[in-house]
Image (cartoon, rainbow, N blue to C red; front, side):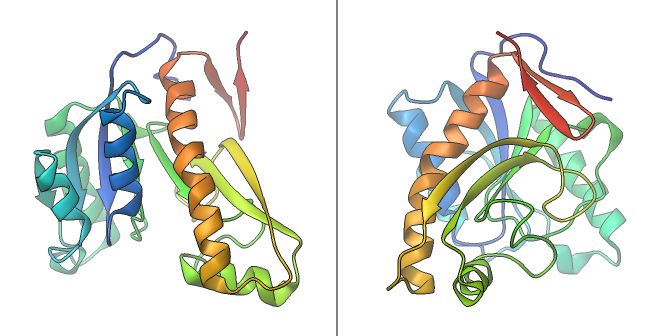
Length: 214
């Protein structure tokens, strides 16, 4: 099992993967600028040339690359090209921010990819559960709490070892949009917290469990 974070990393070098508007990317850029996160975004890689988040990267003068999923016949070929771009940037960690493509993870990136999901995994997770679909499902089910989960990536959707979770109450008058807004507010604090923990060198992965050394 690859355990690449046994010593503190300062700053934490990250590549951010996006597919859409880049709200998570924008939050990380803001946290870094405010010195609330000791990290450097060394590259942003998009799976679509029209991903709106590329504008946030360019405005922050972060190098950008596009690895268009449609240009590749298989998940494996797409993943290989994407990880080649990641290697070129020499990151410590690859951070998914609204990245909607499933990856075939290269061995040298095992336990070096993290994702944030807008529910409390394993609830409302897996293939097809993303964005608004998650919050609609939460409300249909009548759940009383939702939240977000930061986890390491493996070869299944929303499945790898969990780093941390944050709870959000579901209100009686919630709509998918209002619930999404409160969950995203939790995400904006949870993701930087998880990245700081990983960068501290205190996090260990044991199978599907994560443990924090004192």
